[in-house]
Length: 298
Image 1 (tube, rainbow, N blue to C red):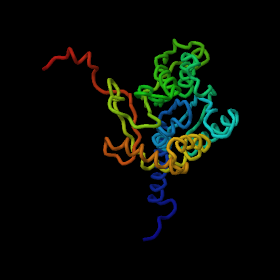
Image 2 (image 1 turned 180 degrees about the vertical axis):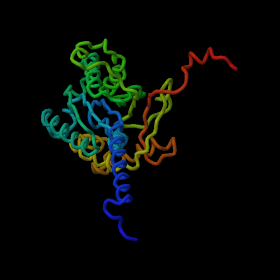
Image 3 (image 1 turned 45 degrees about the vertical axis):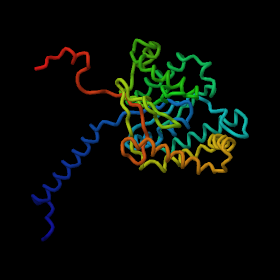
Image 4 (image 1 turned 60 degrees about the vertical axis):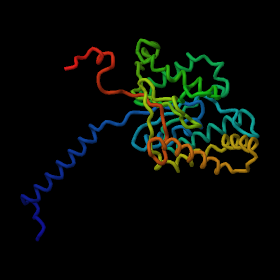
């Protein structure tokens, strides 16, 4: 079959079809809604990557902007370095880990790690509210301070004030920010994460919350690689394990076995091979219970 001649009806039709297809593609791109941003609140970069690194990497891969606000300066997590050198090393290594996972930005606030009890919770809460107004996240991650027998005071303090921060989402709160052009904002979903151990019975999923498992099998290797970039804090943690147990394990052996064991334990409850688990709070469909109480039976 010969090719259509220039100017023939078939040639004009093909040109029109291509023009229409291009216009539809440009229109669909223009009206496509980007996925909402994610704001992560953490005492240290280790905490959020151990607790939620796979899920956050998956969210970044689907087009969400992931912003991490680290409250602690991480000046104490090293073996042979002084406080200043430790802080610099951990902050730099944390940013490399975040970059590997696809995070958009890391903001280090520089509060002294291990001493969050000496900082006003209102001051920290206002900082989270300011970041919420700046980034306008759809999803907020923060450490779960409801865990039983929690020994890390920074996780407790940061998690507690972060959960309270949405209460100030109105533009009538922090009005100085409202006057500066940052109106009130609040996330629509909340992920409580447990950094270093699986959830136990009665540690989530109560009231309006539910337990949520996320399959991280596609992200597990990248999560482990990101954690291995945090060499300074890893060495400090493994040195403590060696001193207590007498085992001569390498840092990489410990990281890989720990992350995989946590993922297996989190997924076991829902039949997922490797997962991260969250106490999740989000919008629910249907009428609230106090309305249904007075609903007619027929």
